[in-house]
Image 1 (tube, rainbow, N blue to C red):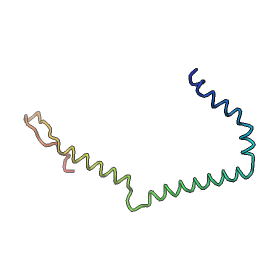
Image 2 (image 1 turned 120 degrees about the horizontal axis):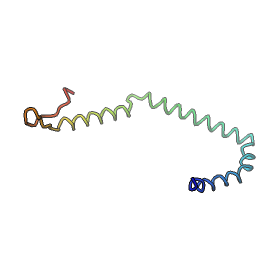
Image 3 (image 1 turned 60 degrees about the vertical axis):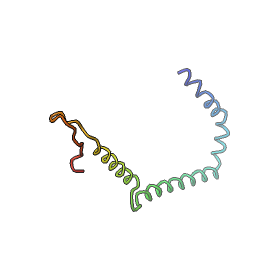
Length: 97
């Protein structure tokens, strides 16, 4: 706890010293409007990015998952398993996949 407190002390002291200047800066009407406009633009950008990513002809993340899954299946199907009942090696398949 002592180390945590010592690590946060510089930040807390800096905020304490800067608080009056920050309050004056944020109290300006133009600054508040610029910040509000920036938040609206970033929110709309985020919505369009999410919406646009789901509207494409292929969902790249889903395709990557499918390709990876098929690659794993191909690798597993190459392994051979020792069959204890018959005392010999047999192909380890995935049941018709």
